[in-house]
Image 1: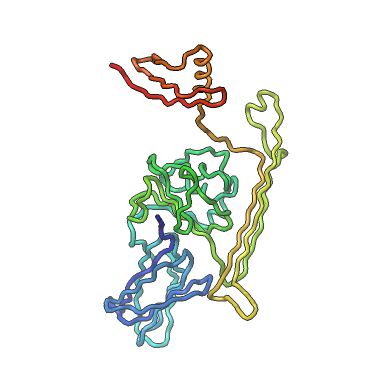
Image 2: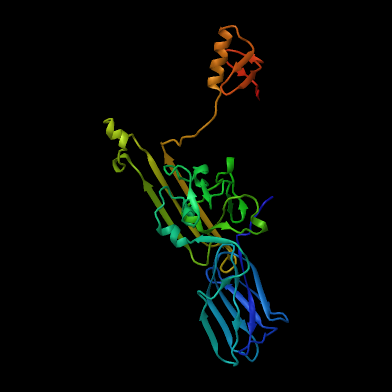
Length: 355
C-alpha cells in the first residue's frame, strides 16, 4: 500500500547567546487553533524535534533555568513541511521574549520542489464548479490537458488531467496522505472547497515516499475542528437566464439549451460537547456536505467494434467466412473468423508484415 505523509515536522537547536547548545531545555509546541500541546526535552546536542504535525499555526515555547522564556509565535506548518527553527535563549530569570516566527522557519528537511495552495487562495480565487483541485495548475510547470468545461467534483479524470514539466506519466493524488484514485488515474474523491485546508503540488525531486508515478504529487489536507464553533453555507445556481449562448448556437439561430445547475452545501465544526464531557483542547468534529444537480452530461470516449461487426456481417452475406485482407504498404492482416452472428462478433486479429 502506498501512502505519503501529509503532516509536517519541526526541529532545531536551542543555543545560548554565545552559540553554545543548551541541553535539558524544555520545548513545548501548541496548536493555536485546537490548543493541543506536546513537549520534549533537548538532548546533549541541544536539539529538539516534533513530528506528525497537522498543517496549522503553532506556538513554540522554550524554558530553561537561569534563562528567559523564549516564545516563537505564529509558526506555520504546511503540508509535508520539514521545518527547522533554531532558538537562542537570553540570560535572565523573569522576562519572557516573544518573537513572531513568520518567515524564520526554513524547510531544510527535504529536497522536494513544490507549491502550496493555501486556504486563502481556495476561498478567494474563482472556482468554476467549486473544486479546489483545479487550482493545481497554479504551480509552476503544470499544464492542464483536460476539458475545462467539466471540472466539477464528479469529473474524476479532468481533475487529474494535467502534466508536470512535460512528463507523460500519471499524477499521484492523495487525501491526508492516503491514495485517492479512481478509474484510470482520476481523482477518487474531491472534497468540497470549504473542507480543504490547503494542498501541496510537488513537481520535482521526489524522495522515496513519492516514487509511485512519473507525474506530479498532489497532497490534499482537509480541515479539522477547533476550540471554536464555525460554520458556513453556500449555494450556486447556473440557470439558462444567466448563461450565454455559444458561437455555433448563434450561427444556426438556435436558442440556449435548458440548463439545470444547482450546487449547495455547508460545513460545521467545533469541539465535541456531550453530557458530562467537553472536548475543548482534545476532541473535535468537522462535518462537510455538498450536493450537485446538473443536467449536462460529461462526454466520454470509448472504443467499440461497431465497424468490425458491420464488416463481419457483410462478409457473412457474401459467404466469406475466413480469408486474408490485403492492406496498404505491404501489410497482411490474417483474419481468423471464429464466430459471426447477427448480435455478436468475436474476431481475433493477427497482424504480420511481409517484406
